[in-house]
Image (tube, rainbow, N blue to C red):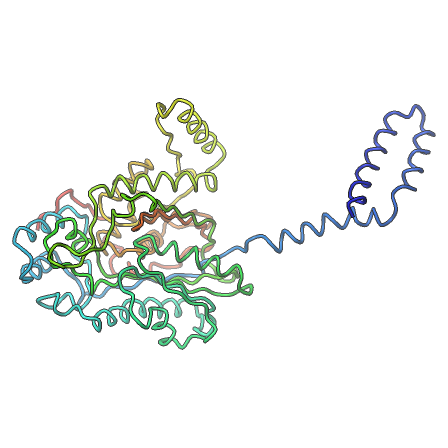
Length: 473
Protein backbone atom coordinates (compact mmCIF):
# COMPACT_ATOMS: atom_id res chain seq x y z
CA UNK A 1 0.00 0.00 0.00
CA UNK A 2 2.88 2.39 0.81
CA UNK A 3 4.41 1.83 -2.67
CA UNK A 4 1.08 2.60 -4.30
CA UNK A 5 0.63 5.84 -2.36
CA UNK A 6 4.09 6.96 -3.44
CA UNK A 7 3.82 5.75 -7.05
CA UNK A 8 0.64 7.65 -7.95
CA UNK A 9 1.77 11.16 -7.04
CA UNK A 10 5.31 10.44 -8.32
CA UNK A 11 3.95 9.40 -11.69
CA UNK A 12 1.75 12.50 -11.85
CA UNK A 13 4.76 14.69 -11.09
CA UNK A 14 6.79 12.97 -13.79
CA UNK A 15 3.98 13.56 -16.27
CA UNK A 16 3.96 17.29 -15.55
CA UNK A 17 7.76 17.52 -15.77
CA UNK A 18 7.94 15.74 -19.13
CA UNK A 19 5.12 17.85 -20.55
CA UNK A 20 6.98 21.03 -19.60
CA UNK A 21 10.42 19.93 -20.81
CA UNK A 22 9.62 17.99 -24.00
CA UNK A 23 10.52 20.12 -27.04
CA UNK A 24 7.95 18.55 -29.29
CA UNK A 25 4.42 17.23 -28.99
CA UNK A 26 5.46 13.76 -30.18
CA UNK A 27 7.93 13.44 -27.33
CA UNK A 28 5.19 14.41 -24.90
CA UNK A 29 2.82 11.77 -26.28
CA UNK A 30 5.53 9.14 -25.99
CA UNK A 31 6.11 10.12 -22.39
CA UNK A 32 2.40 9.93 -21.64
CA UNK A 33 2.26 6.48 -23.15
CA UNK A 34 5.08 5.30 -20.97
CA UNK A 35 3.39 6.72 -17.88
CA UNK A 36 0.16 4.89 -18.72
CA UNK A 37 2.14 1.69 -18.60
CA UNK A 38 3.51 2.66 -15.19
CA UNK A 39 0.14 3.54 -13.66
CA UNK A 40 -1.85 0.34 -13.37
CA UNK A 41 -5.63 0.38 -13.04
CA UNK A 42 -5.30 -0.62 -9.36
CA UNK A 43 -3.34 2.52 -8.69
CA UNK A 44 -5.98 4.68 -10.31
CA UNK A 45 -8.69 2.93 -8.32
CA UNK A 46 -6.88 3.54 -5.04
CA UNK A 47 -6.23 7.16 -5.94
CA UNK A 48 -9.97 7.66 -6.36
CA UNK A 49 -10.99 5.41 -3.44
CA UNK A 50 -8.73 6.72 -0.66
CA UNK A 51 -10.11 10.30 -0.53
CA UNK A 52 -13.64 8.94 -0.42
CA UNK A 53 -12.72 6.48 2.31
CA UNK A 54 -11.02 9.20 4.33
CA UNK A 55 -14.09 11.43 4.02
CA UNK A 56 -16.32 8.56 5.16
CA UNK A 57 -14.15 7.86 8.21
CA UNK A 58 -14.20 11.56 9.10
CA UNK A 59 -17.98 11.75 8.87
CA UNK A 60 -18.33 8.64 11.05
CA UNK A 61 -15.78 9.68 13.68
CA UNK A 62 -16.58 13.38 14.04
CA UNK A 63 -18.69 14.40 17.08
CA UNK A 64 -22.43 14.32 16.51
CA UNK A 65 -24.38 17.53 16.68
CA UNK A 66 -26.44 17.82 19.88
CA UNK A 67 -29.73 19.71 19.98
CA UNK A 68 -31.95 21.16 22.69
CA UNK A 69 -35.42 19.86 21.94
CA UNK A 70 -36.98 22.10 24.61
CA UNK A 71 -36.75 23.10 28.24
CA UNK A 72 -39.11 23.92 31.11
CA UNK A 73 -38.68 25.84 34.37
CA UNK A 74 -40.53 25.36 37.63
CA UNK A 75 -43.32 27.92 37.95
CA UNK A 76 -43.35 29.35 41.43
CA UNK A 77 -46.72 29.61 43.17
CA UNK A 78 -48.05 32.67 45.03
CA UNK A 79 -48.41 30.70 48.25
CA UNK A 80 -44.63 30.23 48.34
CA UNK A 81 -43.87 33.94 48.00
CA UNK A 82 -41.61 35.42 50.68
CA UNK A 83 -41.61 39.23 50.90
CA UNK A 84 -38.74 40.82 52.80
CA UNK A 85 -40.94 41.51 55.82
CA UNK A 86 -41.96 37.86 56.07
CA UNK A 87 -38.37 36.64 55.70
CA UNK A 88 -37.14 38.95 58.43
CA UNK A 89 -40.06 38.18 60.75
CA UNK A 90 -39.26 34.48 60.50
CA UNK A 91 -35.57 35.16 61.09
CA UNK A 92 -36.42 36.96 64.34
CA UNK A 93 -38.15 33.82 65.59
CA UNK A 94 -34.93 31.79 65.39
CA UNK A 95 -33.57 31.91 68.95
CA UNK A 96 -29.96 31.48 67.90
CA UNK A 97 -30.01 34.47 65.50
CA UNK A 98 -29.07 37.75 67.16
CA UNK A 99 -30.71 41.09 66.40
CA UNK A 100 -27.38 42.19 64.96
CA UNK A 101 -27.54 39.34 62.42
CA UNK A 102 -31.13 40.23 61.51
CA UNK A 103 -30.10 43.84 60.87
CA UNK A 104 -27.21 42.58 58.73
CA UNK A 105 -29.59 40.42 56.65
CA UNK A 106 -31.92 43.40 56.30
CA UNK A 107 -29.11 45.44 54.74
CA UNK A 108 -28.20 42.53 52.48
CA UNK A 109 -31.76 42.16 51.21
CA UNK A 110 -32.09 45.88 50.55
CA UNK A 111 -29.01 45.79 48.31
CA UNK A 112 -29.43 42.29 46.89
CA UNK A 113 -31.40 43.05 43.73
CA UNK A 114 -34.14 40.61 44.79
CA UNK A 115 -37.80 41.60 44.58
CA UNK A 116 -40.78 40.85 46.79
CA UNK A 117 -42.03 37.84 44.80
CA UNK A 118 -39.20 35.37 45.25
CA UNK A 119 -40.22 32.03 46.72
CA UNK A 120 -39.05 29.63 49.39
CA UNK A 121 -40.23 26.02 49.92
CA UNK A 122 -43.19 25.28 52.20
CA UNK A 123 -41.03 24.33 55.20
CA UNK A 124 -39.58 27.84 55.32
CA UNK A 125 -43.05 29.30 55.85
CA UNK A 126 -43.39 27.78 59.30
CA UNK A 127 -42.18 29.36 62.52
CA UNK A 128 -39.57 28.58 63.68
CA UNK A 129 -38.29 27.62 60.25
CA UNK A 130 -35.38 25.39 61.25
CA UNK A 131 -37.65 22.94 63.12
CA UNK A 132 -39.54 22.08 59.93
CA UNK A 133 -36.52 21.64 57.63
CA UNK A 134 -36.65 17.85 57.82
CA UNK A 135 -35.60 15.16 55.36
CA UNK A 136 -39.24 14.53 54.55
CA UNK A 137 -39.78 18.23 53.82
CA UNK A 138 -36.71 18.26 51.56
CA UNK A 139 -38.06 15.33 49.57
CA UNK A 140 -41.41 17.13 49.32
CA UNK A 141 -39.60 20.14 47.79
CA UNK A 142 -38.02 17.82 45.20
CA UNK A 143 -41.46 16.43 44.36
CA UNK A 144 -42.83 19.94 43.92
CA UNK A 145 -40.01 21.55 41.94
CA UNK A 146 -38.45 18.74 39.92
CA UNK A 147 -41.56 16.81 39.00
CA UNK A 148 -43.42 20.00 38.02
CA UNK A 149 -40.62 20.98 35.60
CA UNK A 150 -40.29 17.47 34.14
CA UNK A 151 -44.07 17.12 33.75
CA UNK A 152 -44.18 20.38 31.80
CA UNK A 153 -41.24 19.35 29.63
CA UNK A 154 -42.85 16.06 28.64
CA UNK A 155 -46.09 17.90 27.89
CA UNK A 156 -44.32 20.50 25.72
CA UNK A 157 -42.26 18.01 23.72
CA UNK A 158 -44.77 15.18 23.47
CA UNK A 159 -41.95 12.78 24.37
CA UNK A 160 -42.85 9.70 26.41
CA UNK A 161 -40.73 8.85 29.48
CA UNK A 162 -40.05 5.50 27.79
CA UNK A 163 -38.14 7.37 25.07
CA UNK A 164 -35.54 8.81 27.49
CA UNK A 165 -32.17 7.05 27.17
CA UNK A 166 -30.01 9.18 29.48
CA UNK A 167 -30.79 10.99 32.74
CA UNK A 168 -28.46 13.53 34.38
CA UNK A 169 -29.48 15.40 37.54
CA UNK A 170 -27.53 18.03 39.44
CA UNK A 171 -28.25 19.25 42.96
CA UNK A 172 -25.32 20.34 45.08
CA UNK A 173 -26.37 20.26 48.72
CA UNK A 174 -29.10 17.63 48.95
CA UNK A 175 -28.01 14.11 48.12
CA UNK A 176 -30.54 11.65 49.55
CA UNK A 177 -30.65 7.86 49.39
CA UNK A 178 -32.14 6.70 47.06
CA UNK A 179 -30.69 9.39 44.82
CA UNK A 180 -32.41 12.06 42.76
CA UNK A 181 -32.20 9.97 39.61
CA UNK A 182 -33.80 7.04 41.43
CA UNK A 183 -36.66 9.29 42.52
CA UNK A 184 -37.22 10.41 38.93
CA UNK A 185 -36.91 6.87 37.55
CA UNK A 186 -39.50 5.68 40.07
CA UNK A 187 -41.88 8.58 39.42
CA UNK A 188 -41.90 8.22 35.62
CA UNK A 189 -41.20 4.47 35.44
CA UNK A 190 -38.18 4.99 33.21
CA UNK A 191 -36.54 2.06 31.47
CA UNK A 192 -34.25 -0.26 33.42
CA UNK A 193 -31.39 0.25 30.94
CA UNK A 194 -31.35 4.04 31.25
CA UNK A 195 -27.94 5.62 31.83
CA UNK A 196 -28.35 7.83 34.88
CA UNK A 197 -26.22 9.89 37.23
CA UNK A 198 -26.58 12.52 39.94
CA UNK A 199 -23.98 15.30 40.22
CA UNK A 200 -23.66 16.79 43.71
CA UNK A 201 -21.44 19.45 45.24
CA UNK A 202 -20.78 21.11 41.85
CA UNK A 203 -22.28 24.49 42.72
CA UNK A 204 -24.26 26.99 40.72
CA UNK A 205 -22.55 26.17 37.42
CA UNK A 206 -23.58 22.52 37.55
CA UNK A 207 -26.31 22.79 34.92
CA UNK A 208 -23.72 23.46 32.23
CA UNK A 209 -21.61 20.59 33.55
CA UNK A 210 -24.68 18.35 33.22
CA UNK A 211 -25.24 19.59 29.67
CA UNK A 212 -21.63 18.74 28.80
CA UNK A 213 -21.93 15.30 30.38
CA UNK A 214 -25.19 14.57 28.56
CA UNK A 215 -23.60 15.70 25.28
CA UNK A 216 -20.70 13.27 25.79
CA UNK A 217 -23.01 10.38 26.64
CA UNK A 218 -25.09 11.07 23.53
CA UNK A 219 -21.96 10.63 21.40
CA UNK A 220 -21.85 6.92 22.24
CA UNK A 221 -25.61 6.31 22.28
CA UNK A 222 -27.58 5.33 19.16
CA UNK A 223 -28.38 8.19 16.81
CA UNK A 224 -31.52 10.01 17.88
CA UNK A 225 -31.15 9.10 21.57
CA UNK A 226 -32.60 11.52 24.13
CA UNK A 227 -31.06 12.85 27.33
CA UNK A 228 -33.08 14.42 30.15
CA UNK A 229 -31.11 16.99 32.20
CA UNK A 230 -32.58 18.25 35.48
CA UNK A 231 -31.03 21.14 37.42
CA UNK A 232 -32.14 22.35 40.85
CA UNK A 233 -31.01 23.21 44.36
CA UNK A 234 -33.04 21.98 47.32
CA UNK A 235 -33.34 24.87 49.76
CA UNK A 236 -35.21 23.17 52.62
CA UNK A 237 -32.34 21.53 54.56
CA UNK A 238 -29.88 24.41 54.10
CA UNK A 239 -31.20 27.14 56.37
CA UNK A 240 -28.27 28.50 58.38
CA UNK A 241 -29.13 29.40 61.99
CA UNK A 242 -25.79 30.82 63.11
CA UNK A 243 -24.39 34.34 63.21
CA UNK A 244 -21.33 34.19 60.95
CA UNK A 245 -21.87 36.98 58.43
CA UNK A 246 -20.08 35.17 55.61
CA UNK A 247 -22.56 32.31 56.05
CA UNK A 248 -25.74 34.41 56.31
CA UNK A 249 -25.60 35.62 52.70
CA UNK A 250 -26.94 32.36 51.15
CA UNK A 251 -30.03 32.64 53.40
CA UNK A 252 -30.79 35.99 51.79
CA UNK A 253 -30.03 35.18 48.14
CA UNK A 254 -30.98 31.57 47.41
CA UNK A 255 -34.56 30.79 46.41
CA UNK A 256 -36.61 27.88 45.13
CA UNK A 257 -36.32 26.96 41.45
CA UNK A 258 -35.47 24.23 38.97
CA UNK A 259 -35.37 23.41 35.27
CA UNK A 260 -35.53 20.39 32.99
CA UNK A 261 -34.05 20.20 29.48
CA UNK A 262 -34.31 17.53 26.78
CA UNK A 263 -31.30 16.97 24.51
CA UNK A 264 -31.03 14.75 21.45
CA UNK A 265 -28.76 14.00 18.51
CA UNK A 266 -31.80 14.22 16.24
CA UNK A 267 -32.66 17.70 14.90
CA UNK A 268 -36.36 16.80 14.68
CA UNK A 269 -38.43 19.44 16.53
CA UNK A 270 -35.24 20.89 18.06
CA UNK A 271 -35.24 24.52 19.19
CA UNK A 272 -31.51 25.13 19.76
CA UNK A 273 -28.25 23.59 18.66
CA UNK A 274 -25.47 23.16 21.20
CA UNK A 275 -22.32 24.65 19.70
CA UNK A 276 -19.78 24.52 22.54
CA UNK A 277 -19.35 23.68 26.21
CA UNK A 278 -16.22 25.07 27.87
CA UNK A 279 -15.35 24.27 31.49
CA UNK A 280 -12.76 26.02 33.65
CA UNK A 281 -11.74 24.72 37.08
CA UNK A 282 -9.37 26.71 39.30
CA UNK A 283 -9.61 24.37 42.28
CA UNK A 284 -5.86 23.66 42.32
CA UNK A 285 -5.48 27.00 44.11
CA UNK A 286 -6.34 26.83 47.81
CA UNK A 287 -8.07 30.23 47.82
CA UNK A 288 -10.31 29.20 44.92
CA UNK A 289 -11.06 25.82 46.50
CA UNK A 290 -12.18 27.39 49.78
CA UNK A 291 -13.99 30.50 48.52
CA UNK A 292 -17.40 28.74 48.56
CA UNK A 293 -17.16 26.21 51.37
CA UNK A 294 -19.71 24.24 53.34
CA UNK A 295 -18.65 24.03 56.96
CA UNK A 296 -19.68 24.27 60.60
CA UNK A 297 -19.33 27.50 62.51
CA UNK A 298 -17.91 27.60 66.03
CA UNK A 299 -21.28 26.53 67.46
CA UNK A 300 -21.74 23.58 65.10
CA UNK A 301 -24.29 25.20 62.76
CA UNK A 302 -23.75 24.13 59.14
CA UNK A 303 -23.79 26.66 56.33
CA UNK A 304 -22.05 27.88 53.19
CA UNK A 305 -19.16 30.25 53.82
CA UNK A 306 -18.68 32.78 51.01
CA UNK A 307 -15.18 34.26 51.02
CA UNK A 308 -14.60 38.01 50.77
CA UNK A 309 -12.28 37.19 47.83
CA UNK A 310 -15.09 35.54 45.89
CA UNK A 311 -15.43 38.24 43.23
CA UNK A 312 -11.67 38.34 42.58
CA UNK A 313 -11.55 34.57 42.22
CA UNK A 314 -14.62 34.59 39.97
CA UNK A 315 -12.97 37.23 37.81
CA UNK A 316 -9.84 35.10 37.39
CA UNK A 317 -11.93 32.05 36.51
CA UNK A 318 -13.87 34.11 33.97
CA UNK A 319 -10.63 35.26 32.31
CA UNK A 320 -9.49 31.65 31.98
CA UNK A 321 -12.84 30.64 30.54
CA UNK A 322 -12.80 33.55 28.09
CA UNK A 323 -9.35 32.52 26.90
CA UNK A 324 -10.65 29.03 26.18
CA UNK A 325 -13.94 29.92 24.49
CA UNK A 326 -12.78 32.98 22.53
CA UNK A 327 -11.11 31.04 19.66
CA UNK A 328 -14.26 28.94 19.26
CA UNK A 329 -16.81 31.74 18.92
CA UNK A 330 -15.17 35.05 18.04
CA UNK A 331 -14.86 36.36 14.48
CA UNK A 332 -11.36 36.45 12.98
CA UNK A 333 -10.88 40.18 13.58
CA UNK A 334 -11.52 39.86 17.33
CA UNK A 335 -9.34 36.76 17.57
CA UNK A 336 -6.45 38.64 15.96
CA UNK A 337 -6.77 41.55 18.40
CA UNK A 338 -6.94 39.14 21.32
CA UNK A 339 -3.88 37.18 20.13
CA UNK A 340 -1.79 40.31 19.55
CA UNK A 341 -2.65 41.67 22.99
CA UNK A 342 -1.79 38.33 24.58
CA UNK A 343 1.61 38.23 22.85
CA UNK A 344 2.32 41.84 23.81
CA UNK A 345 1.54 41.16 27.47
CA UNK A 346 3.89 38.17 27.48
CA UNK A 347 6.65 40.07 25.72
CA UNK A 348 6.36 43.15 27.94
CA UNK A 349 5.85 41.27 31.22
CA UNK A 350 2.23 42.31 31.64
CA UNK A 351 2.76 46.04 31.18
CA UNK A 352 0.16 46.06 28.40
CA UNK A 353 -3.47 46.23 29.47
CA UNK A 354 -5.25 42.94 28.67
CA UNK A 355 -7.61 43.12 25.70
CA UNK A 356 -11.17 42.04 26.46
CA UNK A 357 -12.70 40.64 23.25
CA UNK A 358 -15.99 42.10 22.10
CA UNK A 359 -18.26 39.11 22.66
CA UNK A 360 -21.16 41.16 21.37
CA UNK A 361 -19.81 40.24 17.92
CA UNK A 362 -20.23 36.55 18.79
CA UNK A 363 -23.53 36.47 20.70
CA UNK A 364 -26.86 38.23 20.57
CA UNK A 365 -28.00 37.12 24.05
CA UNK A 366 -26.22 36.63 27.38
CA UNK A 367 -27.50 34.44 30.21
CA UNK A 368 -25.22 35.24 33.16
CA UNK A 369 -25.78 33.25 36.33
CA UNK A 370 -27.92 35.39 38.63
CA UNK A 371 -25.71 34.76 41.65
CA UNK A 372 -26.23 38.24 43.00
CA UNK A 373 -26.11 41.88 42.01
CA UNK A 374 -22.30 42.02 42.45
CA UNK A 375 -21.79 39.05 40.10
CA UNK A 376 -23.88 40.63 37.34
CA UNK A 377 -22.25 44.04 37.83
CA UNK A 378 -18.77 42.54 37.56
CA UNK A 379 -19.52 40.60 34.39
CA UNK A 380 -21.22 43.57 32.78
CA UNK A 381 -18.11 45.64 33.46
CA UNK A 382 -15.64 42.93 32.43
CA UNK A 383 -17.39 42.09 29.16
CA UNK A 384 -18.43 45.69 28.36
CA UNK A 385 -22.09 44.68 28.06
CA UNK A 386 -25.02 47.06 27.81
CA UNK A 387 -27.86 47.24 30.34
CA UNK A 388 -30.15 45.45 27.88
CA UNK A 389 -27.66 42.60 27.44
CA UNK A 390 -27.66 41.88 31.19
CA UNK A 391 -31.36 42.63 31.60
CA UNK A 392 -32.37 38.95 31.60
CA UNK A 393 -29.99 38.23 34.48
CA UNK A 394 -31.07 41.21 36.59
CA UNK A 395 -34.76 40.53 36.06
CA UNK A 396 -34.39 36.81 36.83
CA UNK A 397 -32.60 37.72 40.07
CA UNK A 398 -35.36 40.21 40.93
CA UNK A 399 -38.26 37.89 40.15
CA UNK A 400 -36.91 34.50 41.24
CA UNK A 401 -33.77 35.17 43.30
CA UNK A 402 -30.67 33.04 42.99
CA UNK A 403 -32.07 29.68 41.87
CA UNK A 404 -28.54 28.26 41.65
CA UNK A 405 -27.75 26.19 38.55
CA UNK A 406 -31.20 26.65 37.00
CA UNK A 407 -30.93 30.45 36.86
CA UNK A 408 -29.55 30.47 33.29
CA UNK A 409 -32.72 28.72 32.10
CA UNK A 410 -34.98 31.33 33.72
CA UNK A 411 -32.92 33.95 31.90
CA UNK A 412 -33.27 32.18 28.56
CA UNK A 413 -37.01 31.98 29.22
CA UNK A 414 -37.05 35.74 29.87
CA UNK A 415 -35.42 36.51 26.51
CA UNK A 416 -37.96 34.31 24.75
CA UNK A 417 -40.92 35.65 26.71
CA UNK A 418 -39.90 39.15 25.60
CA UNK A 419 -39.98 37.98 21.98
CA UNK A 420 -36.34 38.91 21.40
CA UNK A 421 -35.09 35.53 20.19
CA UNK A 422 -34.70 35.07 16.43
CA UNK A 423 -33.72 32.11 14.29
CA UNK A 424 -29.93 32.04 14.05
CA UNK A 425 -29.39 34.07 17.24
CA UNK A 426 -26.51 32.91 19.41
CA UNK A 427 -26.76 32.57 23.20
CA UNK A 428 -23.95 32.49 25.75
CA UNK A 429 -24.72 30.86 29.10
CA UNK A 430 -22.17 31.57 31.83
CA UNK A 431 -22.22 29.85 35.21
CA UNK A 432 -20.06 30.14 38.33
CA UNK A 433 -19.83 27.55 41.08
CA UNK A 434 -17.91 26.20 44.03
CA UNK A 435 -14.57 24.63 43.40
CA UNK A 436 -14.09 27.27 41.90
CA UNK A 437 -15.59 26.86 38.43
CA UNK A 438 -16.59 29.03 35.50
CA UNK A 439 -18.46 27.16 32.78
CA UNK A 440 -19.87 28.28 29.44
CA UNK A 441 -22.31 26.92 26.89
CA UNK A 442 -22.90 28.42 23.46
CA UNK A 443 -26.22 27.78 21.68
CA UNK A 444 -27.67 28.69 18.30
CA UNK A 445 -31.42 29.21 17.99
CA UNK A 446 -33.24 27.07 15.44
CA UNK A 447 -36.84 27.82 16.37
CA UNK A 448 -37.84 30.56 18.86
CA UNK A 449 -40.69 30.02 21.31
CA UNK A 450 -44.11 30.60 19.79
CA UNK A 451 -45.46 32.34 22.90
CA UNK A 452 -44.46 33.66 26.31
CA UNK A 453 -45.76 30.62 28.16
CA UNK A 454 -43.40 29.50 30.88
CA UNK A 455 -42.16 30.74 34.26
CA UNK A 456 -42.70 34.38 33.18
CA UNK A 457 -46.24 33.88 31.90
CA UNK A 458 -47.91 35.85 34.71
CA UNK A 459 -45.29 38.57 35.18
CA UNK A 460 -43.47 39.30 31.91
CA UNK A 461 -45.77 42.24 31.18
CA UNK A 462 -44.38 44.00 34.29
CA UNK A 463 -40.73 43.62 33.30
CA UNK A 464 -38.20 45.12 33.06
CA UNK A 465 -38.47 47.02 36.32
CA UNK A 466 -36.21 49.63 37.83
CA UNK A 467 -34.07 48.17 40.61
CA UNK A 468 -32.75 50.81 43.03
CA UNK A 469 -29.34 50.52 44.63
CA UNK A 470 -31.03 50.27 48.01
CA UNK A 471 -34.61 49.03 48.24
CA UNK A 472 -36.37 50.47 51.28
CA UNK A 473 -39.51 48.75 52.47
